[in-house]
Image (cartoon, rainbow, N blue to C red; front, side):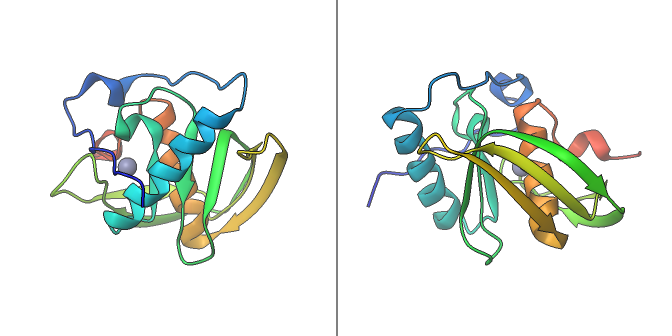
Length: 147
Ligand code: ZN
């Protein structure tokens, strides 16, 4: 069991940063992604982005009971449909916000072995990925309030 990260909360400037693209995927990224996954499971969350644990790199983990997805430099290639759902966030505790997002997406990125991966996601899986990619751009659920 790896030690868990501390979750950064709203007000921490790293949550508003645009995260750096990972140029060389190595053992460090593999370790971070593993520790992020453990932290996500321990927090009973369905996703986590690196800035939420104080790391300004483009790394996300998602698990909505469809298996663990670890993605480096994720990029959404295709968005389809639209849906609104109430979302929460570990970094913004105590609030939920209705967020409009694409229903289905195709996302591309790299895995920790440095291989290119393309994922088709629907429903909650697609939503969680979009939420985590928002974090990499410094976007939080509160930015969707009143919109
Ligand atoms: Zn979040």
